[in-house]
Amino acid sequence: MMQRWNRKKPHFPILILLFILFIVFTILYNELNIRQINEDPDPVSRNQRASITYVKPNLAKRASEVLDRFSTCNSTREYSWRRIGWVDPSPNLGRGRVDGESCDVFSGKWVFDNRSHPLYSESECPYMSDQLACHKHGRADLLYQYWRWQPHDCNLKRWNVKEMWEKLRGKRLMFVGDSLNRGQWISMVCLLQSVIPADKRSMSPNAELTIFRAEEYNATVEFLWAPLLVESNSDDPVNHKLADRIIRPDSVTRHSSQWEHADILVFNSYLWWRQGPVKLLWSDEENGACEELDGLGAMELAMGAWADWVASKVDPQKKRVFFVTMSPTHLWSREWAPGTEGNCYNEKTPMNLEGYWGSGSDLPTMRMVDKVLARLSTKVSVLNITQLSEYRKDGHPSIYRKFWETLRPEQLANPASYSDCIHWCLPGVPDVWNEFLFHFL
Ligand SMILES: *[C@@H]1O[C@H](CO)[C@@H](O)[C@H](O)[C@H]1NC(C)=O
Ligand SMILES: *[C@@H]1O[C@H](CO)[C@@H](O)[C@H](O)[C@H]1NC(C)=O
Ligand SMILES: *[C@@H]1O[C@H](CO)[C@@H](O)[C@H](O)[C@H]1NC(C)=O
Ligand SMILES: *[C@@H]1O[C@H](CO)[C@@H](O)[C@H](O)[C@H]1NC(C)=O
Image (cartoon, rainbow, N blue to C red):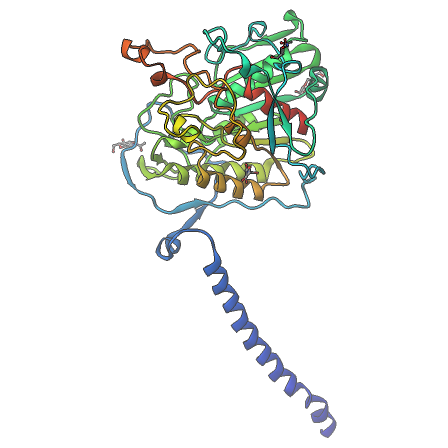
């Protein structure tokens, strides 16, 4: 008896100690939690936070109705605070996209270099777009074609068309996004096509998916029209000028069923979210009732649905994924030349104001995209073209492109009024975006 009691005796203080430890840990843990909540940088108020629910996107079960340009909302209500829940990719599965290079190639300056640039001639590219062929449409000053990007602390790999084709051999390279991404795709096709004999290459008719094919390399360079990444009523590549944007905020599956077969993917999305509120039609909605949300909030949902696809479907050993950051616009010359009232029209040289940032590049959008891409860093390489393209106020078509609508006399009298300060002339700025792609591939 005594012995047993003696043996048990020491257990008593241990139990008390454990109990005290438990209390201390509970208090500490609660305090940590409170601190975490207080430090959460998310600018959502307490009340809204309480009503947030998370939706799992891209479920195999498709929404009952496919969105097209005739889709309408039966009713519109306030945003329900549903968000997209997606899980970070496991870092162990990724090969890691830290490219072993400490130099930031996106930080640098434009250097006039008419020996190395342009990398092709506008008139010799049979796939050139009439919206981007500025010289053909009357632009006489051609300096915009002669600039090379020079990073501050290192050099960009020199463009080499044969080497690029070797990288693409047996592969599908696909650009996915809006008309800016389409411009980058045309730039890539123009950069690549000259070394392929005319009877050994082909271009499919313009469609949702347009394919440039080079036989001898068994390779394709494709463009998929998906301006909002998620399914939307604007997915028709030609007829998409609509008053209301309706998106399926929780599904990229319509587009991913096409892009999942590519080996190298280059995504972008930005400007289409800058046109006012967006209507959300969730996949599980059965009565056609939409919710309304501002563009940035809606883009965050779409980026979440896209990120879910990347995180769960991309094996970095087999697929390369790039995301091109926002392409800046130059709609207000007063931002770089105070006191003036124009836009990009008549701009003939890049800016030499290092760090210049215009209102066309929305900082809250950039921070949101930064956050998503940081979580995907083992699977996605960033082509951070925003800052360097900001300097190129001279790079837009302005009036030197084909316009679809007939211009009225009062427009013609004031060229700035119909100038395109959004897209980019080719050869020009998007060629350099593709030099980055070549550099990282
Ligand atoms: C390049 O530019 C310089 C200076 O403007 C000019 O003298 C030269 O002829 C140009 N060379 C080519 C190949 O266009
Ligand atoms: C061509 O490339 C595709 C992949 O894009 C591959 O499936 C096919 O086997 C290749 N064909 C030849 C002849 O190499
Ligand atoms: C909209 O409402 C009508 C009539 O109530 C219904 O027939 C239709 O299916 C609804 N639309 C959608 C997309 O649910
Ligand atoms: C892109 O570069 C800007 C600076 O120009 C930086 O603030 C931003 O975080 C970068 N974004 C990404 C996704 O790397």
